[in-house]
Length: 113
Image 1: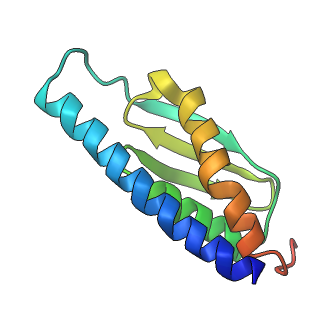
Image 2: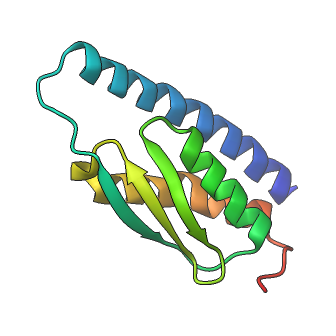
């Protein structure tokens, strides 16, 4: 049951994150008060299985403004490209809060090899 609930939570959080991020990017494009500062950041997470890491990377990629460029499941790190790296710490914390725990619960029985 925990895994089912985690799946539903992930779907809801992705839906909300896509809507919010899409709105923020659209607003900044239509009303450019300041320019974007694109850049790369390193995201570290507790190692998880390959399927869980892949799902986490996909969730990051479908959220507007973020892309997983390099994924190292064994070491628990991803190199991310952010459309606005000036808010990198906030974005990383949001990923950790919204997605990482739920993905970990969804794939709880998966071996970390």
